[in-house]
Image (cartoon, rainbow, N blue to C red):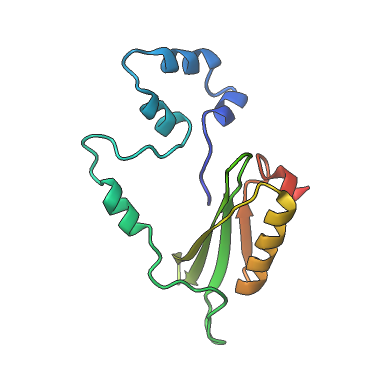
Length: 155
């Protein structure tokens, strides 16, 4: 599962109203940083009193042993899944996470083994890079938002 997005998706589907958004933005007791975090999914630093600070989160987000291609043994039941959070426009980059999934008896475990950005909003470039990654890892799945921004990639 890849989760991302902002208030526009629930707004589009009628789960929130434009009036609610306007009232929230204009509220004297609600900061723009809070709005950006909660409604626009933008990282703006850790809020005052947060359990985890910026440094802790940055340390935890590092992949310690990057796998740049398929590293499974022939007997391994592990498989790779690639998840992409598609870039929309401007200076945005498509964020990609490669996970190595290990089947267990009743569940799966996974480990992020590579994280990278595709610094382009040209879907030909993005599609080709994602295809290269799928081949490099012999990935079983490529997960991306085909209903939203990624519709161009699907088409």
